[in-house]
Length: 70
Image: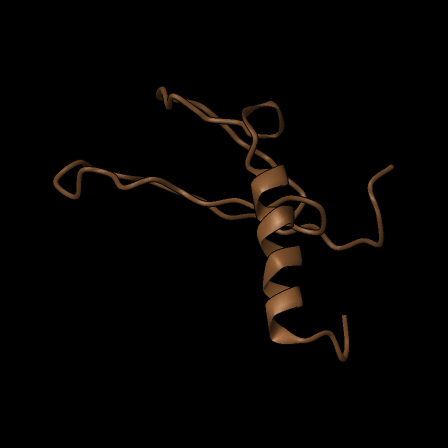
């Protein structure tokens, strides 16, 4: 929020982070060959955990143009 003091801003953001990382709001993928994951960057946060750099990783990225899902 514009004009919010830093300490209040940090408290608000900490509360939001704590809320959204609850297990009931998260998805973890145990990857298998052939898996496909699709998400909407407009309404999802995503990250990856560390991985074995000696293993082969093959990733393809696709983008769709549009205003909202139907």
